[in-house]
Length: 181
Image (cartoon, rainbow, N blue to C red; front, side):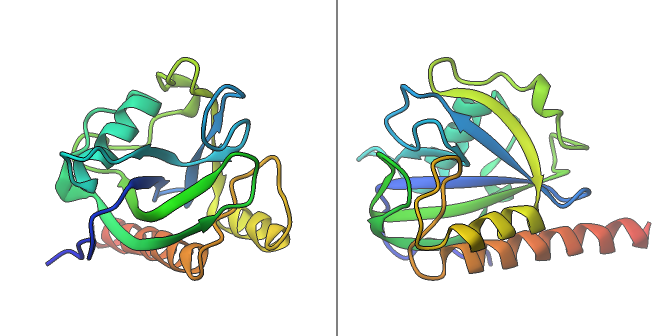
């Protein structure tokens, strides 16, 4: 059985992985965005009172990128981050955030779509790019404890470590499944 969040969350972060190339999709938030203003980050949204985090996670991916083909069973729950501020102006995590990973290829996407072809949320997301997992780790490691105005840096204990483990494992699983065929 897939892991599920232990408690109701107030927000979700969803990291999209191109498992074939070991690259993570990053979105540059517009300067007008309430969260992560001007920073490269993941898909995210608040969880409304009447919903659970999984539907909110799928909604955040659809709203931020236009990718509407994912289903809840494809969501990989990574961890539940307990609050505290994140590095970056105006980018505080609420008390509880569910962190998910969506890997491509998936049921609806035989390969990861090009960043240039995404339908980005007007006024919320200005640009998209893929970055290799190792480069993301490098950026986060040199930014730990320091303000990084260009990238969202997760600061709750264990967030980045656990996320990077999951991303790498999903990339390895994909590589193994491709070599079996």
